Length: 190
Image (cartoon, rainbow, N blue to C red; front, side, top):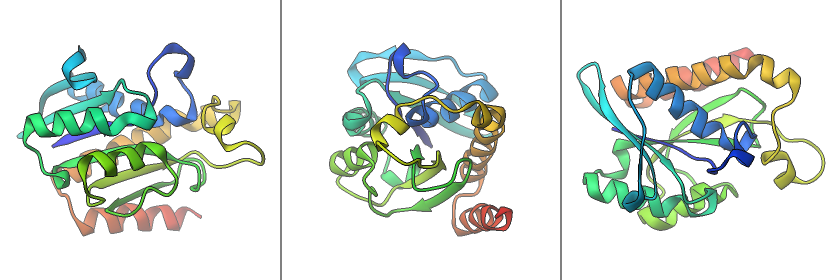
């Protein structure tokens, strides 16, 4: 199983809303004791190992968000993985902060990272975990590239842990039951 965190490389993008996919996948690497290494041929950072009985690979594209599909396509091709054996973690400004949505397939919803993956994988049929970052009035680009508010930072660690839990649940039991449980529990929180 390949876990992909979407985000932008570089210190100026650290801890921005658009990089929450990076943070969730970094959390998985820490939980599983995996070490990152920069792989130029795959245009990103790679970590590989095991979670229990399952072999896992993690990828953080270094291509910037809008070209994420280049790195994902190259590494997935190298691993000979069909898209269903991936889980993409990305931010979603259309979901309230901290809300999680897990589904297989769908459009890009205006998210340029997902648009790039669809283009380079040649399909929309890959699992994705969207992590809500909320939306504010004004410029959307400024919002997603901005840092979390003080109030959001108080809950950010919990959101990242819950998203990592959802990734692990998908790893051990991918399918409708995991999606229903995650998406239902989010609805019940409202």
